[in-house]
Image (tube, rainbow, N blue to C red; front, side, top):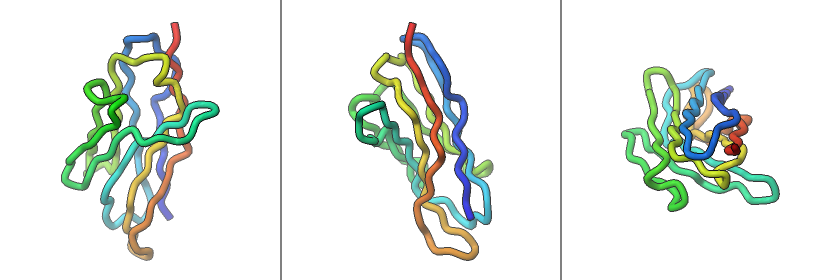
Length: 120
């Protein structure tokens, strides 16, 4: 089994930065694509951005130029660096990863989410 655990959420003032890590653990053979999603109250979950196994990234237009995704393969950890935060970035942030384990073929796993609130 694979577990993804996000952390680093909290209350931040508009314009401020915040970094969210997401660490994968379990019987991991290889982690392929990883991604960050977010879901605000009353809204559908939306893709924030993705990163491939060779660290190629893509971002939603709403966060391009402000957010940055990176990964540390040695630590099985995904990061979301958020700068110039806006109140509309307030949401529960989730990480997702496509993982091969030693006993199961590649499939997607999700974390439980971490709340980010941008407010003065």
